Amino acid sequence: MKKTQLYTLILLSISVVVLTISLISSQYLYSLAKENLWNLKLESGERETREISRLLQEQLRSGLSKTQVINNLQISIQNTDTSSDFICMYNREGIELCHPNPALIGIKIQEDNSQIKRIKDTKVNTLRVLLQKGERSNGLRVFPNNSNRSSEIVNIYPVTGTDWMVASHANISVLEKQLSDMHLQFVLSLLLSTLIIVICCYTCIRLIYRKYQTAIDFEIKNLNDKVSELQILNIQLNTNLEKLLNHPKNPVAKSLSNDNETLKKRILTYHKDELVKLDTNDIAYVFLNNGVTYINTFENRQFNSNNSLDEIIRWLDQTSFYRANRQFIINIRAIKTILLYGKNQLKLIIKSEVNMDIIISKNKVADFKLWLDQ
Image (cartoon, rainbow, N blue to C red; front, side, top):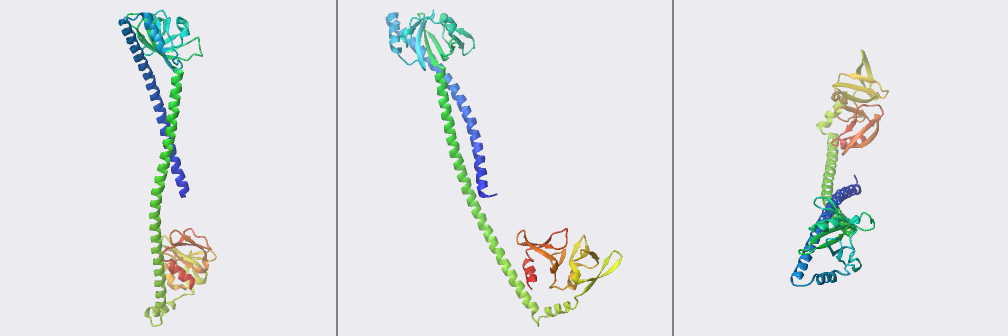
């Protein structure tokens, strides 16, 4: 695999894993933030109505009239923004006593267009009914007959000693907009974090891989240098050996010359029950299979022999025949192609069909080349 493909696969894998985790995390954080914001609005609304109710009680105890207390509250909330959340006050009959919009003061709540879904027991009541009970309550306020008006989170708290009910309202659509913006920020921040993590991981992996690859390349270079040195030494050794053997005063050379006298022009072999006289020039190769020696000719005829490969190679001309390995003796005229094979090995393709690969091991490559070059 190429380095570019490897880096690309690593980058894609890291991106998919980190992005998946980020999306799952963002969804979880969004759900958690939504729940926390909902609870926060309920708690803050309840706390706000309770504090205002106590403040109104203190004003009444200090001797202020109800009218003056109502006016003070109206002044403090008048013209406040009602698009998100606001405070108002009703009496138990459902009439607006205080509201940020003064035009609504004195108007009675429509009974059929203001329903409260309680948070704790999930019961549905009208806002008029809850006000009439005079008890603290909270829930989700919906408007069945007014689809253009957003739902609200409502907290109601009574003012002790009066028929007043302080109410806080939080617009659901505004909360959802806040949640949507928050979710978008979550997603953007997580995507940015994902990008940073992917780039950092990719950079680290590339640096580690580069360092590892440098070490591997250095080792390979050292091994190639050593192999080259061994090949040079092997060639020098074969050259010196050849010179030594060809020296006229060398007794080994004399023995080899005596062995050359044993070369045969013909070899006796068998074909079924027939004794065959086979010319050595007609032999393409000799091979050993399952302990049986076979002699194949250039005419693709095959004969059996009772002799071993060691015996047969001594009978053949060493300039024309070569002992390729433990299984094959090859005639130079039978070699069709010589291929590079594996690490510093050669593979012989001969003119006749052979069911086995003829491999020259790396230890014999130099000797084989000298044989070809003689």
